[in-house]
Amino acid sequence: MRFAAAVSALALAGAAMAQNDTIIKVGEVNGTMALKFDPPFVNITQPNSTVTFIFDGVPGNHTVAQSTFANPCEPMEGGFNSGFFFVNSSSGPFGTWTLTVTDVNTPIWFYCAQQTPKVHCTAGMVGAINPPATGNTFDKFAAQASSAATVVYPSTVLSGAGAFATAGVASTTLPSGSSPTGSGSSGSGSGTGTGSGAPSASSPSSAGSLSTNGFVAFLAAAFGVAIL
Image 1 (cartoon, rainbow, N blue to C red):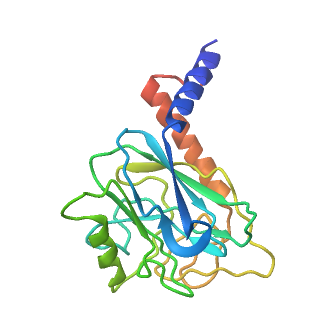
Image 2 (image 1 turned 180 degrees about the vertical axis):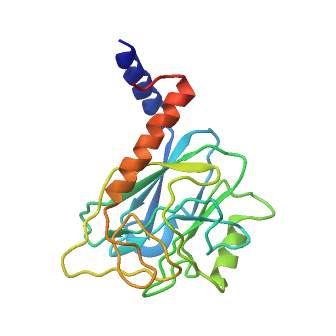
């Protein structure tokens, strides 16, 4: 009975949170491939709402890595990073990566850490959650990214400042003969890649399973439910 009640409470909590999901497309704008996040920034007002990144830019090999306003193309200490998600088919499967936003009062800045054959961050592939309307605005953040001297690829981390990953519900498969690459500082990713500083070969679904477990634990703690 306790187990059934726990499962029911977690299911209801998950369903309630899913109703507040915001979508950001990665690597495409209005169906056309682009080194952009679409929309480039979103405003979240309710804590524990989710933001789901859909990696459907084809061909695409991108990341979502948390940075700071001062250094748009460098990883924030203690920030999240999705790892590489690669898609080479317009019909998918498309990788997804979901963040739960726990702090709606502080801006969350992020960038794509891919650097070959073009540096994505300086080309304009940056984004934000709850950027200020004045002062350190998104436009200023993007302008700083365009002139960044350093672009760094961080290790894959599911939890960051003000948000944590909840689920990578779709996995992507590297087609035979394809070789996406990522360069930069050393690190491991939850996508597939080769090259200097690139993530090791693994499936994004592994990140999804890890983050899902963390998500269940978070809900259990939030609702006082024991998982047996």
